[in-house]
Image (cartoon, rainbow, N blue to C red; front, side, top):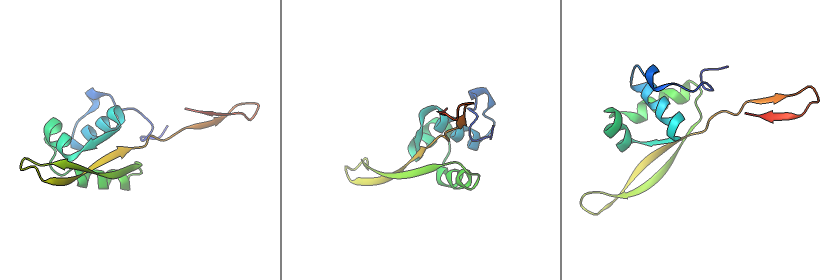
Length: 97
């Protein structure tokens, strides 16, 4: 099984990249504000860039939020697409996991 299909346990989180992988696998998405609040990560876009290079399927969607002054601001929300494992049984029937 490749690293991208294994679910990381919270106790296995050793660094900021691990924290982002765990969060994406558990919650499915993350914003820069969540990364700052929950993990102290201020360069989420850099971590996402590196994870994409490693083969993780992560898309970004622009979300509009109000800032403290009531103005609209755009924040990227990163969404993880877990890989699907496909197997053929003895009768050539497809099973997805």
